[in-house]
Length: 313
Ligand SMILES: Cc1ncc(COP(=O)(O)O)c(C=O)c1O
Image (cartoon, rainbow, N blue to C red; front, side, top):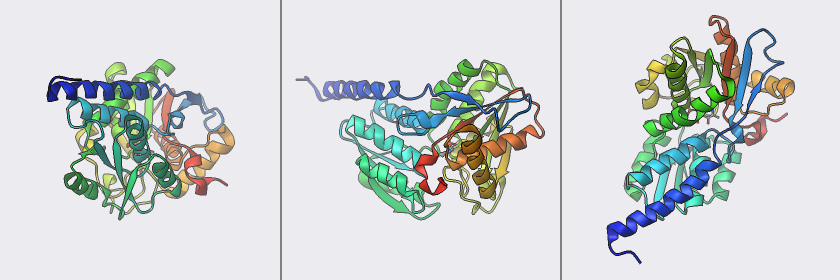
């Protein structure tokens, strides 16, 4: 038995952190593959297969980091509630960590989210709240107040960016040694800015960092009702994109049709079954190479085609 309330809390957080550490150990260290048939010139283009994380996306990285941060700051204790607004992948990752730690996960998703992701969330025991397109972030903040839970707020939480700065960036450098160009779709901007910042700090400003957004995205000053590429931002400019924009050299727009064509090519020519945002990344690499000179390029397959049955032929 523990002798005081504070002492009890410390012991219990230690227990949660131990559980979290176990989860952390199975996240990351994902493989990279060279794309030899899509890019046949001298330029070496690599794709990091983030769908090989435990729940199938790069968001496992930020879920463990953001929840750890909330526990360490004393905001989250045993049996506590985590709330997140997510287009799906972060939701699944948060629900996974919550299940492992015995926390309650309340997830606010947009109505259009894939059925596959909803089934995964339900299987992981998360509570699901539906919001209209573009309104899930506002609803999550309102719910956090009402339920007294911790709103992780991936769009503004610096720990999202830090997770990629500490894990994804260093892994890429270890795996490839050199990188001239990094291309990544922008959702919260955690990945593009976290990896971009790490590579620029290690290799200098000559490393070019390119963000990819759907055609019509608010990030490029568009009407915010752009093409829908799940995971990439269209309707608003997230705080992390605004605050960490210095790590992004250029932003390229990609249409839904271009992304779809590329993701099908990725499957047929490289044997990589990736989600639509990975197709957008491939188009982004092609467009970036029209004006950036690079020998080694890396991009990310954030999630898998298996998560979107409608993409399968
Ligand atoms: C499939 C997919 N691709 C790309 C991204 C963008 O990643 P980030 O939020 O780190 O900008 C996301 C984010 O939700 C995603 O789910």
